[in-house]
Image 1 (cartoon, rainbow, N blue to C red):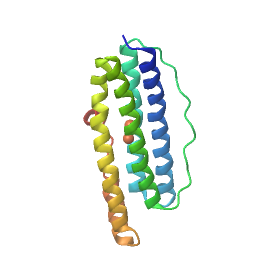
Image 2: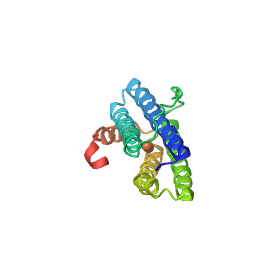
Image 3: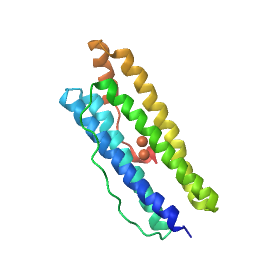
Image 4: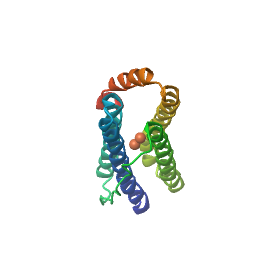
Length: 169
Ligand SMILES: [Fe+2]
Ligand SMILES: [Fe+2]
């Protein structure tokens, strides 16, 4: 049986994943407004992934019979200095999410709640991927900054990303 504390932590993590989805949508909108639809697409897919993360946690709480209490989702920033600023904020945010997942994991482990420990393993691996991708994109945006033809190609590249819930799961 899941403790109230762990259930509460996962409930609030659901809201954090939904916040991340909103944040990425906000980033996506910024790029659409700049006619960089490929990069906008990338963040839109990213946003859908975050909703999928929230869904996975919701399903878990259902499975373990925990009380589900929808959390409050704060308004994310919607003004950004430039493209580089957005990629840096995306990376920063993924790091925050990683720490938040580690925090739940640590508590679950301390309580001997190995079902939650096992459930969270997927998210631990996912965060490694998320941080690696976000970090690589920071490097790339630094490479293409100030070079319109390189930015054009970068936009094309990110436009290729498709949301595939089957492989993301
Ligand atoms: Fe996530
Ligand atoms: Fe993420």
